[in-house]
Amino acid sequence: MSSATEDVNSSPLTCIASTAIGRGPSVERIAGDRKPGRGELITKAQFTPDGTAIIAQHDDHHLKTFVLPTDLLEEEQQPHQLTAYATHKSATEIQDFAIFPGFDLSDISTTYALCGDNDQPISLRNVCDWTYSQAKYPLVNDRTEAHYSPRTLHFINSGSHFLVGTHNSLAVFDVTRYNAGPVSLLQLKPRKGTYNGMPLTRKAYVSALATSVDGVLALGTTEREIALYDHSGMGERTATFNMDPYRGTGVSFLKWSPCGKYLLVAERRSDEIHVFDIRGTRRQLSTLVGRAGNTNQRLGLDIVHTRGESYELWAGGMDGVVRMWHNPGSKEGECPPSEDLKAHQAPVTSTIWHPFTSILATSAGSRYNTYDDEQDPPGGTDNSLRVHTCFIEGMTQLFTPDHHIGTLD
Image (cartoon, rainbow, N blue to C red; front, side, top):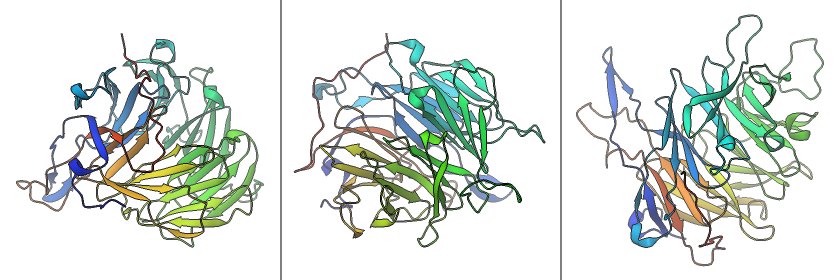
């Protein structure tokens, strides 16, 4: 296993493209108090389904589209400078975004993403020109007429519908019903006297959604409960359980194994990721330990299918290290990482694999509030988005050197 303290330049990760590492305000003084400043901190990044671009969500109310250069893999041109092709500036906090599953950069009619701005209808926007809004989908409290906060957005059924997780509710929208409300709205913890089979026991925000290859939707909440639904969330609730026996303060990520048998659960303020056998006894099989995730900050993770039924889980930590666990669920008990690779000088907020090649993208950032205004955090502020090639001896390589990364004409 590689050392978690090794320098980025000596890591098996080779950075082939990056945004500028911005300093940004480390702290700002408000009414005599030091509070974390907002800047270029990336809270979430995601590859488009065709692998041609990365969409990044920033904590300063921005969404940015980074189109990857066509010569990304040509060594003589590396490292490339990543610059935003298009930017969306929201008047309110952006809760989440979701990219259309049929995204194809060569077809402008498919390059859409859902944008969940706070106190606004959910909007369907073109990521090549964020100012263009194709449709809006209101999700409003009938009694107060206030917009529900769209904490989690998730496309299902190849993009014909999408789910919105909010406070104590799961909404289903038909994408083609422009400017219309949800086709269904499920209350997670029903009112007293209302029948709702296998309900959750605590009112909370929906904080994570994930669909298995078999169409089972997993839903996680900020109050540490998990529910499973048939038909990608449009069917019956089939099971509920909670994370009370384990350390954590709320579900942050849910991921399915490629076979759909195992559900992986990550929480805030936890160094562990738990693996549950869903097809069988729905019991916890193993615990992936050593993540370095004891923080309220949301740290990203990703599943990569390697060969046959094999797969890997990659997750970022507070120490700037990306860790990999091979075949989660294949062993019981506590499982340490198979590899740990230094990627950043700040907490790793996103860890995402390219859908077709052995390219790993990571983002990092943190808000510092323990330093004087005149003093920089140690090592500066790493709020970068980086694209890496990765070579680990013995690791199954997915690399296809002739794959066309794509461009925008």
